[in-house]
Length: 365
Image (cartoon, rainbow, N blue to C red; front, side, top):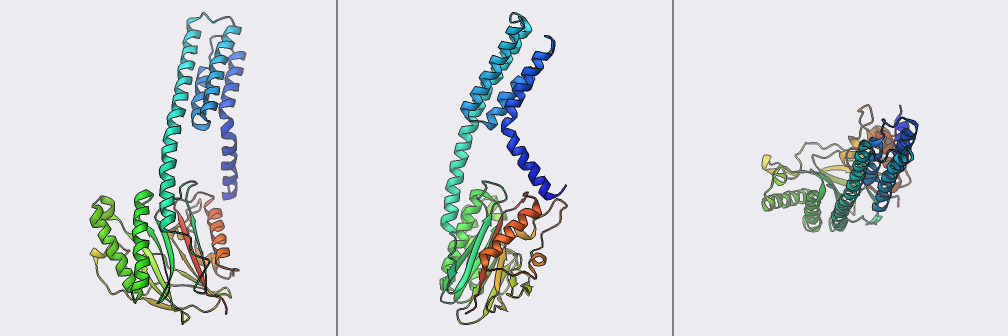
């Protein structure tokens, strides 16, 4: 079975699922009408409102529960066995489960509302600290994209920021260990420190050190397990205003890709490996920025491991360098749209990690 077939099968299941309580009721009624009195479809009658409690609204669940109870009563009344002790027990059982199904629906609805409220607040906080960058920054074309691994799960530890500074256009893309609101708080720390450092620090290495110190302060303030064990992989870049160079500092993050306008591609691996941000107590080293030419028409692609570690159903990783070599794109946004669609096809819609992408192109004059 191909990934496309799997996706279609999953979509078919989602379409059919809302009809399951109705099908259970129909099967129960047919079974009770066609079998002897000693046989019972009580399990099907009780299953219908329980399933409905997770699929329907309160009104739909209550309606399913009432139909289940009335159907049991009507069938036994038609067969003239309403006074039978087994019939009374069955009717009581179905009525009790139907009432529980309505209660479950109410409790699930309240919990869902609270979760939605918390998620909305966290998403708003994440958007506040990590707004979408402008499409044009100091003459460079810019595009950014975030793809959640699961629908409705837009809260995570991926981060990016682009800022014009006296030293050129500076940017950061990173991935915080962990998910949820705690990860969003670390994202806020990293981006806040980056925006200040991008303006003040003379070198990209000094920017990285400022982020390291900000995370160390945050870990000391929080003093919890996630803080002590947490880290952030990141790549920082600087594109000076007056040259066709790009400077890079990579702290344990997947290497950026340089796409030329003729389809050639170069992986910008760092000359020396470095630990992620937040692990400075394990070692000290000079923050040396690597340099590479960024000619006109070329595009820099930064990504999290949600791209390079996306797996298909056979466990094969998605290789962006192999997939992109020989291709050209009209702009950064077209490149990111292509990658998002490619990953969705590669994983069959079953991505397990969030995906953050940032592309910067130096347009022809």
